[in-house]
Structures are given as structure tokens and as C-alpha cells.
Length: 160
Image (cartoon, rainbow, N blue to C red; front, side, top):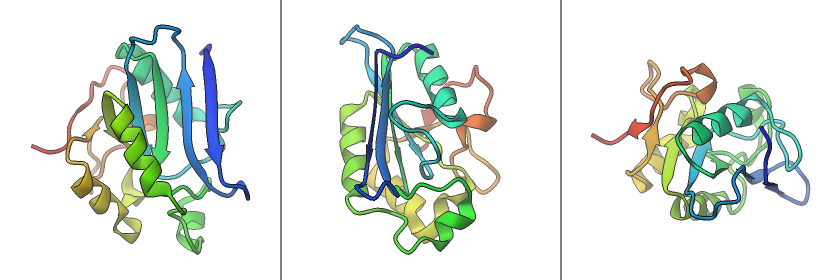
């Protein structure tokens, strides 16, 4: 996908990514969607990973002009076991980044998959933001990860 802007904010040590944003439209009237994932993997201000590409494809297909990605845990890891072993996986200021992203978006999608229950993070975020949507629920009831969902899926409210 061709972007008009690409940004990512990391900690000074580069071990934490607090947000990542992509825009594909110059039309400032088009709204933005935020995706709340589990934790950052390899994507940065210049490159996408499969999850970022998938989220961007969903957002564009729904008519949005851009997206922001934040995570329950800001610690960068490609394997859930590394996240569990990290001494401070949430990251300082991460809750503020989540709040800011949700406040600035027209739609907020929870998509952290099974491991969101670590340290009670999923429950905390769901309690604080009852307006969240998702693209499906897995067997444990957690919001499904976007890589495992049909491209035609539409978001729906998590809360009944």
C-alpha cells in the first residue's frame, strides 16, 4: 500500500514502541481508526509487518483515511514468551498513548488475541473503554488477532 505518511514512536532504548500510524489519503475529512494489539513486533516508521499490512487493508476497505496502532504492552517482541519474560512489558506512559489514540479515532478495534490476559491488561482496557469494537472473538473470549480473520469481516461492538 502507498502511504502519504508513516510514523512510529519508540522509547530511547528502542525496546518499546508506543504507537505507529499510517495514512493513505490526503483527504483530512476521512476518519482514522485505531487498532489495539497485544505488543509491537517488527514494524517501524519505514516498514510494515504482516499485522500492520492487514490492519491497513481492513481500515482502507472500511473507508478510513488512516490508522494508528497501539498495544496493551509496548515492549517489542516477536514471541509471546519474550513478552512474559520482560520485566516491565507495559511500558511507561503506554496507558496514556492508548487513551490518546482512542480519543482521536472514529473507531477503536481491540485485536490482541489470546495473550491479552497477561497481567490483567485486557480486562483493564475493556473496563476503561467499553466502546471498543472487535473483528471476532476467539475461544477464550478475547478479541481475535487480525491475521486470522476474513478480509470481509466488519467490526462490531464488544459490549452487548
